[in-house]
Each structure stands twice: as structure tokens, then as C-alpha cells.
Image (tube, rainbow, N blue to C red; front, side, top):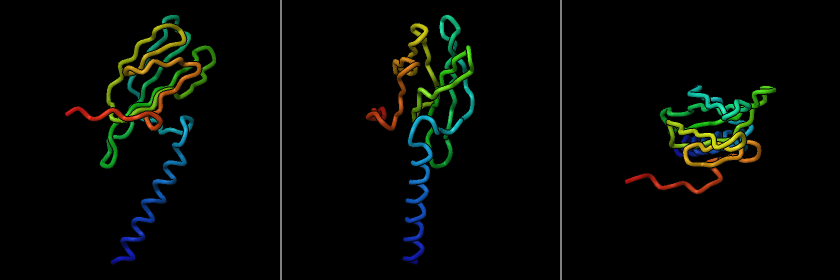
Length: 122
């Protein structure tokens, strides 16, 4: 019985380490389910939003990628948890606001794992 418990803990720890290694940076995130696209004012770029998670052991979250419409290249710029909806507003060709996070799509990324979490509303 004790051996089974120890093996379970070791297995869970190993799975967590593998998942952390796979998703340690913004280049290796789960795809998710497509939700919506938002074109920049001059249509040179598009932000695509994807919903992920929501299973028995995880909450919903969002992934946002920017697409360069001239060559089709993509880059993940937004990775959040505890979100199911996206409020996306372009300020100009290089700046987008996603759920209150202002990002320069050429240089910035929002990764919820690197920023303090806001407390859940009571």
C-alpha cells in the first residue's frame, strides 16, 4: 500500500516535470480550439485566439498568436489561465490589448506563469 502511494507520487511528479518542460516557453504551447480572429487596423496582422483546457483537472485558458499577414508567420503572444473570453482591441498596427494586457506584437508576450496571479473574486 505504501509502495503504491510512493509510486503514484513519483509518477505525478514526473508527469508534471515533463509537462513543464514541454510548455516552458511560449513556443511550445497546446494549440487549443479556435475562437476568433482580430485584424489590425491596416490588416497587416491578425491576432487569433484559442481556448484550451477545461477538463477535469484544469481550468480554461486562452492562447493568442499574432499572424504576419504578408508571409503567414506566427508567434504566440498571449497565454492565460482562468479565462474563457477574449476582449481584443488593436490600438495601432503594432499594439494590441488582450483582456487588459497591452502588448507590442513585435516584441511583447504575456505569460500568466511569469506574472503574479490576481485573486479570485469573492
